[in-house]
Length: 408
Figure 1 (cartoon, one colour):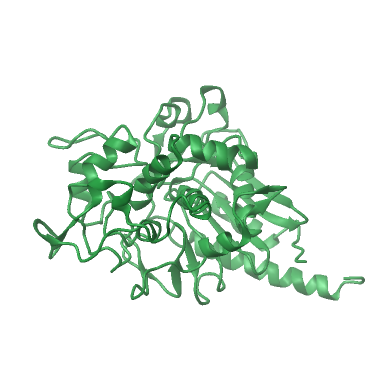
Figure 2 (figure 1 turned 30 degrees about the horizontal axis):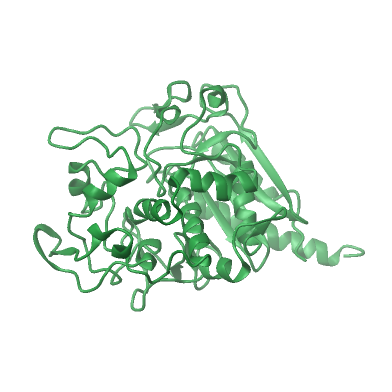
């Protein structure tokens, strides 16, 4: 059995350094000790102008760390044979049959797609959709049609539709638009996981957010994870500030937050969570689908979810920020290291736009959850790789100490 130390001294020191350098106001870390126990290291405050300390139950916007939760929900239905990994999407959502594909990435010129979109394509961002993020060539098209799931402070400009209010409306607007690439031909970070929320809703027969609550959050005791922060819990909510030319500007004030209002249940980026909650989810994935007596997935399904599910011929991941991750495949809405890179082979998980990340290492029975809040996503670009590299340095050192200590 792997035992991990209750302190990761270099990792904790690095977190303190990020706060001292005013890169972030506060940090929450979590990792497993063994025997189901999880350790937390929290430092700093909820906001730059706050004296309230970060705690394991402080609430963070996790943005795209929502995706592995949605992917896990889909794998639960695949395990129950209510959904097929290679099932055509059009069997469930007929509007997505006979999709058109852009010619030379021009929406005015299209041709028929070479194959049908499948559930595998949705899970692995290979369905041919793009994203609404700046830098993605599909952004203008999607924003024109009000397709900006998870981006709550976005308001339509002249000539743009207001944001889709429901998953059904989201799909109705998305289906007639051309794809960027043929399904199954290329990794294109995309709206696919948001569409997967509607698939889960259709197959399960209950609202997507209800499925997550009943099948994942409630069983695991994830009491503070959801698409909205209750008014009586806003005092635990972190602030989100954007780095401007002169100073930091508040993007989302916790006391008047857009997250206090109902929103489209974005399976690609809409959830808030806490270190205590998300650590329990990470522990379940690390432990082949089970934590604290609650089983989300059978071991073989959990291992399938964290395996490389990319279609044949798709051999790399490119992200909108303009870089390619080496030795990286993609599983159920989360990346997996196929060789040593930023983290060792077999490590899986996915980050969030406001700086958050979770790396899960089943071989070492280890995960590191890293929660911070900053904006825009392209700043502090080396923060996450430095954090995981330092955690493994600490782990190696602790393993040496354990192996040489009396009685170890």
